[in-house]
Image (cartoon, rainbow, N blue to C red; front, side, top):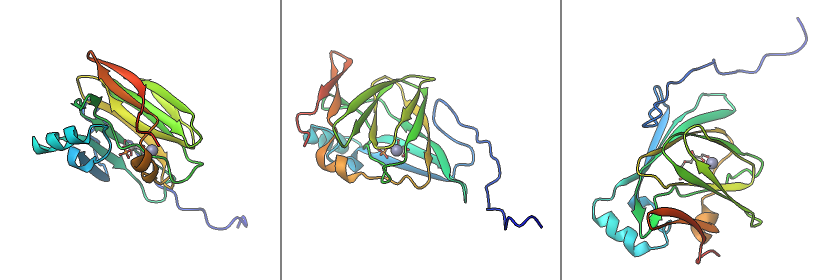
Length: 195
Ligand code: F6R
Ligand code: ZN
């Protein structure tokens, strides 16, 4: 007897094959899709979004995750389609983590885009997403990904299981910066509707 009590339960080591082109993961434990009809209020031009929903309601992004019982971390991929609505590129909803002390890591696997970040206090940042780029998202920074390329943008992410998501603030106020397509190129601009 060592006097140390029972060892905590820990998951077994695991290796998961991920397809860099599609974000598909062998043995994933969860998956969801967001279509344009799920993204009310995300784009500046709500009328253009509604028209595009009527034209076929495409899948905008798919999130695939791998989560093990008793692990403090989980990870997954997001595949974001190329395209535009009303001159804005397809993007994710964007969120703060519910816990202000939990960050995240994003690594781009294929495609190109921009990671838009901001704090509640008004700091902003934009990071280029290209294959091999790993972004450290510190605690307290909201994050949204924008596909500025002509192909799928696929990235992997790693996060604490207890980070949680706060979608409400961004759904209500938008983010301070947005990415517009001007002459076929991405331009970061101030959001005229912020606040
Ligand atoms: C998890 C995370 C990503 C996103 C995913 C979809 O904390 O940041 O897995 O959840 O890229 O984006 P949202 O959640 O903003 O719709
Ligand atoms: Zn996150």
